[in-house]
Image (cartoon, rainbow, N blue to C red; front, side):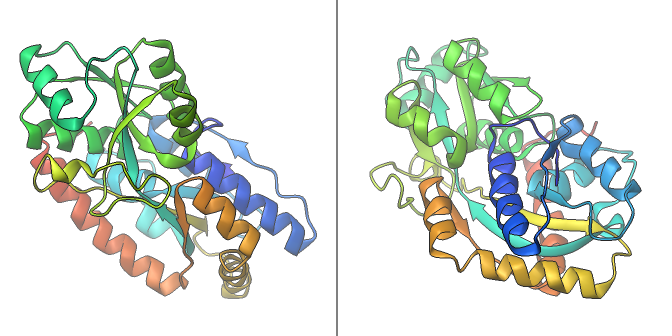
Length: 290
């Protein structure tokens, strides 16, 4: 199971839950292989070079599949053509986090602070072209503030430096952040979706302060293009079974995720729609192509 980011981030956590389920149901050990770099593209290159026999799989997010093709002028592969969608696995809102030393207790106060001190707030991301970067860039644009991007090779390293105070802000998945929010090591100011989340119902949405702001992240399972339909359908069936398991459902919810399977065809349609959506977001946020 190839993952395009280091251990500790939301994509990695989803991959490990998926690998655990597949190991149990297929009777074969599924090993998670973290290959970070270029917003998940390093892992994508390994995937498209793998034999289409169902023994090499890819857990990826909308960052690698729908954002990168819009952001990079030249990619070594085309996610829409070189990867075979198996199933959606789940989705999550993201959460805006700041280091506890940042003198802002709300999104409104953070915006005011950023306007008072342009360029003084550094925001981390899980890499150039990641959902984390684009979420923050859109926030920056719609709020009319000047904050500085500091890219990392995954959500895990970005979280570590945020907790260490090397950066002041990060927008990332709930799954990796919840334990640090509850411990007080990080302060959560808002969520990125249109509704508040069950895990923290008192936490407002960013859109309540910054009109028009809304972002979500999703995760899915892929195989190399050309993988036989029989294998794709078997894997999809296991994803559908996984999201119905009570223990897995509870685990996803505890991580701030919503388990959700789909058919390969439904997933392919979603990816096409997401490619168009992120092209608009990148243009609106004025993020230059790499």
